[in-house]
Each structure stands twice: as structure tokens, then as C-alpha cells.
Length: 152
Image (cartoon, rainbow, N blue to C red; front, side, top):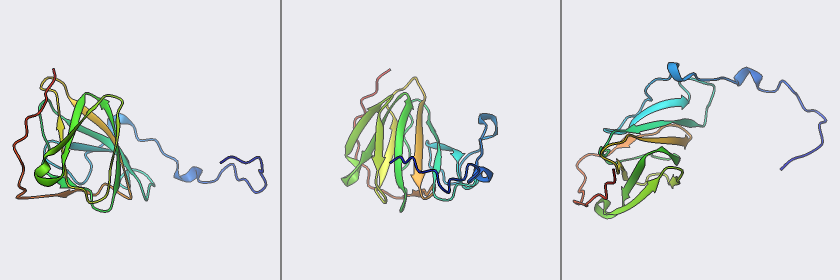
């Protein structure tokens, strides 16, 4: 919604919170899962963000993450580079593939496994979470043997 009413508009509002996180200065995010390496772009650790985590997730060729969920966090993902998949549901038997340019929403507390559906190229996700980068790794999961449709 836009408005033309500029009464009380403060051109300097929140400028003290503004920041840029340079690519060369980014660090590994707190909360990691095997084969899903997270780097914080905008987070509590490197900015004044208080209810947002936004970063990159790297998965090497043919790699598949461990089972995990993101607690109360809502997660939005974007396939920046490569071809990926998410497994979920009973024994993680459901699988959905995503290509560059696709977006995905993962609801709070949904256990899942992420993977790279290429054996030759890296998979890079751009990922955002609210309120934070919550990662709950799940141990001793009953995971079905599912054939992965690898391409390239």
C-alpha cells in the first residue's frame, strides 16, 4: 500500500540500522547440517536484523543432507544455481525436484532432507527464515531407499 501523505515522514528513520554484508566477509552460519553448508548474509550475527535470517546454502555434487527441520521458523528458498530436491513425509519417501529459478516454502517443524540432483554441479540455494536460522538435526531416522533422478 502506498500513500502520498508525507506528514511526519522522517527521511532519516532507521538509517542507523542499515548495513551491507560484503561477500568476502561472510561467515558460516550457526546451525549446520551435514552436506548443507549455510552462510549468513543477513542475520543477528552480522547485522541489526532481529527477526530474519537470509543466506546461501551450498550442497556439493551428489550430496544429500541429513534429516532436519527448522523449528518454529518459516523458510523460503530459491534455487539460485543447480537442480535440487527435498524429501519429506513418511520415511522421507515423498520427493520434489526444483530447478534454477524455482521457489519453495517449508513450513515450521516439517522434517526434510535436501539434496543436489546433479553429480557434476554445485547446488546453491538462497534461503530466508523468520525469526532466525533455527536448525534441528534429527538422529536415527527411518529413511527409505529412494532412487534419485540425477541429471548431469
